[in-house]
Length: 365
Image (cartoon, rainbow, N blue to C red; front, side, top):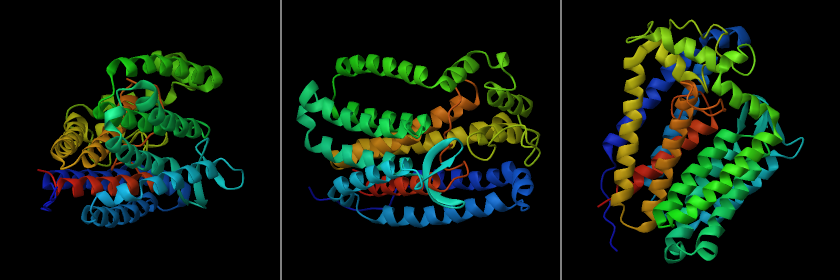
């Protein structure tokens, strides 16, 4: 098949850059008070976000111009390296504990989060594997269990950190690729029941997760403990009303809402910019996902189609979980809002992944 290269999807690129711009502004607005109290510099998080945004844009430009089938060639090596990094995190003295999870490698305030790399590494590998084994995916033991076993292994290592949010995104994006390849819905339904039992087991194994579930059902039972984050998030969203309190005028960022610049940044957006501002952000994400799905449908080969599907799934699942937590639809779990929350590994890897998606769009029919 002759692949004709054209311009990237400008609507996808435009929505990405707009979300990134909103993120830089809102990271500063949400973190200025916290940064001044902790570091004596209200621009601390803004500087870091601008730095990683610049690095991410550079990576996005590179992957947007690097033909996407290069990733197919190195898929196995990428996955092996991701597994090595994921295991290294668990070794005392190598892995760094932040926010109660041993999920970082690095020195001081700079580090990488291998679980973020694993999300993209797994998507690339599954896209290669399933594009070559597409005919056997309807066979349960020969076609479906091997990729699910690989995903389960990665999820299990991530849960040892523990990092349920990232693990959920990994599983969600992987299942979307597997389903798109042609897996039987009946098989996936049976495995879904097994997954529910496993989820119950995870809750039993860690009592703090049970507290999060009960706090999700009724956060006011423990307003100063397990329900604190959910309540403070709703206290931010409620006063925002239609147009918000105004940019920079959030009250909850004054040490009431934990992590206002990362996991709960959408709460600050809703508080300062109101329903209109929050809807604008959701509209940009919808546009990004729509153009990504269009790219997956019109990709010139199966590998490109599955790769685009996985990247779009990763973005969509992460957005749904983050905003679901913020508005009280899901139990609290630590996960960032793509392109907007403060972050290093997450922001850079997300822009790199979108660059791959943009490259696929350059060859779409």
